[in-house]
Image 1 (cartoon, chains in turn red, orange):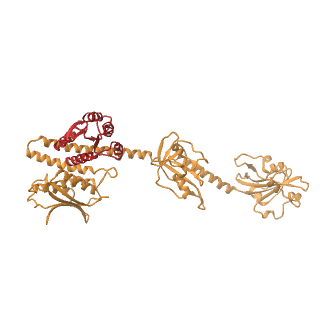
Image 2: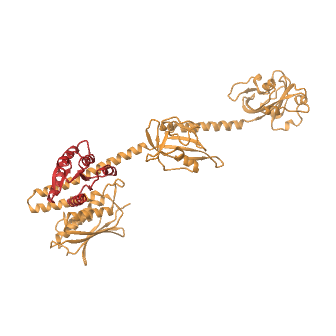
Length: 122
Length: 471
């Protein structure tokens, strides 16, 4: 069963994300709301991939968290964001993003994106 | 030196030239008079009397050197008789040519004259007098001082302008700059030394170093034509940079030859700051709206999971689908490049992909759409219409088989038609106004159009509405 880490500071979105993923046969190893928490959970749980929101609570954003996680563990991210400008995409290049999931997204798009991302990892 | 030697006249009879005027002298349009070595007036012609406004006494000791009532320098100071150019020539035995003085007449009027005085020597080389030819240069003097005045006024205008202005000669050397130019450049330009531009350093808008001889002003001078619409970054000696829009324009003299150029540098920094702020605000708003849509969707999905009632589950699922369709539409709205209109093609593709995901694996959708742009107002009704029509097809399906739907957005005669075709018989009656065909009817009216059903080989649901003004 593929193991995923969710990084999302909006509780409601995180909740639905978790239930959609579980219903489709994925294991959610944790939900982080800040960059620090995301790094800690990624280091401890070693998920297959991280679904990373870019705007997070706290001083560091999702791209900084993703760069740190990639550097420490080699784990890659699917970025979920409402507004992915060219600058964000350029910053994220160094951690080899698996996909960009544009908010607002539905369950169908989420599942398809995660499946495609996992295929990339195999 | 040779000019002085040449100025020595060799007259056949120098004594006579001083003693008496030639008989044709009054015909000349120029004023002429002669003084002896002591400065006593020996003779003068008619024009001289006209310019002096008087006829001075001949041979007297009281009116030596000059026949004027009073004589002034161009600066307005009184010139005493012993200081006149004639007195100077008689003292030094050297000619004076082209000097200007101001003659005051007895009636108080003043004229400017230019004098040309030659010393006269006898055969032994002794100075015996001098002859003065002079003419009225008042008009010339007036025109010159007017030109100087208007040029000074013009400079005052340029100095007072809040926009940075400077000029160069045809070779590109700076000939003038105003205070605003010095302020913008953050330095005092060097007149006659700085070339092409008053800036310390120049960069292209991308931040690449721009050599001065390739700056817009240099281009304008080298190509002898105005340059417009090319931005540049001015770097000051303290390292700060300002974005400017230059307006270099060649200046041509009366014969049309390139005489130099004038450049105005408009600081567009503040405009840029405002543009940036607006972009930031729009981006923030866009982010919030999309994130809130995601939350609303999550909220409905959460409620759907909570309830055990199958009817409530179905109603919440449908509400979730509608929010999902609106959320999908939201994805293509508020692009940075065009916040008021959306791309129709991208919009239709996003909606159909969302519908296929939402109703997977029950439907497959073939899409045929026009491209172009529509105002944002049309987005939500169209997204909901499509969602309801797909949902309506599913409700009418009896088996569990996969439905193949054909969605199209077409333009015809100023109308747009959004249609969905399936292979199922149409429903009997419209029951609800909040869902299905009832909702589509209401949304079609909102778009200023009509909703109709066509039964042919396939069943076609069509919403036809006047095409809003795109772009």
